[in-house]
Length: 415
Image (tube, rainbow, N blue to C red; front, side, top):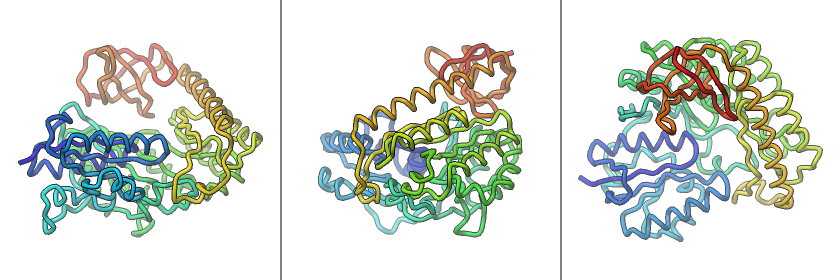
């Protein structure tokens, strides 16, 4: 028996796959939390932007300096494996579409029976959220996205398998079930099923839990919007919508390879807010895309002001190798930084104002994690974070009153 250390970076998909690999490996080896105690190091990488890739390269070098066996998994293992070989020639490389072969790779055998995915999670102390990937890859052709190169075309996992994973997770005591993918809205389009059908099946599972739906793109949402709204009406579903718009200008969206318009985004947001007036809206913006004019950037700012998202994930354009946008003429870095700073300031102003409107309200929250200074963080029905100082176990549904708000979270007390 060997001691294995896992470290994951990037999106919830990476963390979900890392947890699955831990579960598979734990059947024959010991999982350790300390880098120093391990015999084998497993690094699940992300290369979505240049700064993250640099961090991965530095981390690989640090891992190599220990002299321990190293497995590099995640998106870098597919999109940038040449770089891995250059800096860590002895490392084993495990691309995303083969992550379930982790035990085979660690044991050095080629005939180990690979587990079928999705793989039912195991229970871990002080963890009440289970991350369940529902597909890998996507249908998109975004000009800036290296994740598409790493994970390739859509591969949806069987609905029955996903259901068994969720049922197992609920029976083990998990309370927040997070289904994730590069684009959850694309789920099932390759196997004749749909995301609303999946949600409806999962909410039929017996137990006291909440389902959080991961990121979905506007173009995959539009054809099934009515059915999606119906599925969201189930009380087991968090009223949380992560809908990345990326730009408020249609010409820039076209250059990005995004198959929708800014008005499509507006329409989906209006429909969700009409159905669920407290829905949490999360979106993404890329600032400084190649050839973006000041007027086009201003359209992104105006769209954010108009739709008032609760969360805006802002990223400066980052040229990624092997993508179409990599060859496009880039803006001056000072302009890109300025635009990133401006829209980041705007998003915090909107978030703060949105949260202030909830002070004094009574809500039911699910306690999901321990916070700083002996606090507990819970999530409302719309997935807004609430910090409470009361001593309470994780995984509890409790009634609270909102007493205050910050820039990105609420404060409350148990009623």
